[in-house]
Length: 320
Image (tube, rainbow, N blue to C red; front, side):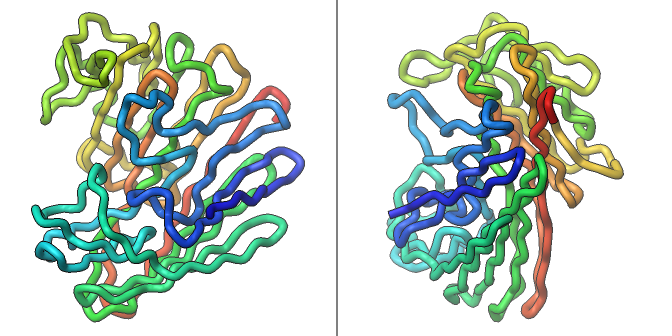
């Protein structure tokens, strides 16, 4: 059974999920899941991955992190492979890469946590598999109107470890439907205008697509956004639409600071995420109720090595 701990100060009330023995999701890290953030007792920012029960979901909510690597492909049917943040998974009959839509047999990693007035420390102990073993130390903390998640990974296995971590931000300002007035500013995206692609979205293209009542793609005749400088601005409703944009490393500007900001004209509130590392790539995804940015941090660890990275969210309104 999962429970929730509140991290509070004068500005913020952040609801952080404490994982139970069996994680709710087989995709996201069970630690540092922030279900909701309330600013000044008024403004909310976090929403579930999906609200429509007819659509498939991987059970994300609010701020949800995922670790990604390619080691599942080494495991044959019935063999084991690790997924950081989740546990040791059993490869199904068809084999192949980890698939977020499949259901796996999972042996969860051992986790512990400690709560203080300003933060929660999570420790995930490694279970060696395929010669791989990584200890995961994570801390979520609040200070003034900011929330920070810091991560330390320690390779205690016999092999080098290559992977990435990316943060899913399932967000809406004050639960306002995504549409006219929303603005997402991405100063470091060289390819921001690719979001303007019209028509059916094929596998290798970015842009918008239309969804029917069952969530299947169709033809799109109008684009609900335009681009102003480094901002994506919504002009119309996202009703039954979804978008997905990927920017690779060569599309990311070199900057002193990497930060995106989401705001809406119908609310004085906004949220920014600052990445204390150079992004290796990122995606933008969204539907009627949610805008989600997914910024990746890629790393390589030799046996015995550690890596550390952090992200900070700033929540603002006309009183902050």
